[in-house]
Image (cartoon, rainbow, N blue to C red; front, side, top):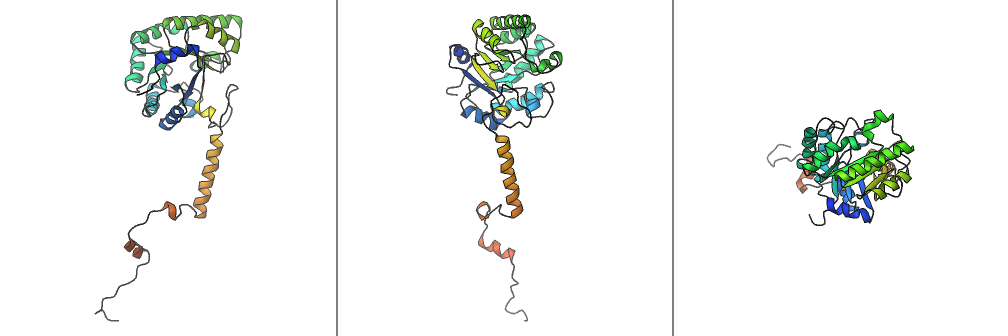
Length: 287
């Protein structure tokens, strides 16, 4: 595909311009993201909460992720497509990690995978890179660790925790990941990490100093109903617009104004006789 964004192209963006990344979970959202010029489409395990209605991302599975990943890549976007590896798909062994990631590459047709965690994930990351599978890292507020963290809380606020995250970032970058998501950490820490590592950082709730930014599709476009995180900037309110549109549709149906003649098909002229049939009498039939 002409102008397809690649992993090396993302690596070169460390010096700018800033990288734009958005989530997508199906063909229409992928088409929208691609036509808007997004550099990266992330098929996030956030689909568990955003699309499937769960309370956290833990119920996402390899099968459900593949279902949505395949829908995204069928749109054939020029954007780089990255798939989140869901909880327990890369925690058990290096062999299983490679097998699961390979399914995203071979069956899901993605360009790279993303996994959460710091230095303890290095064996899995190194195994994936050894299998020629590009890896995006994810540090800070890692949603798959919600139970250990006691909820969705900003990470790295204390000096000791910040030093640990910086060490994690350095280790992951040295291992060979091509980019690093920083979520839910102080802007100052994100700035330090961004300056310290040679790979692009992509922030979400990490301030303005990262090499790029990512938002959830439904957050950015106003498709969520309820609380929005502090870091979200809502660029549209399509949820409310959709409700109003469907209310209009309901009213048109109930009033009889939809469908109109314009939205109806016509048959041959003789079909009209079926609507109001008239009894045809033969000439020799008694009156």
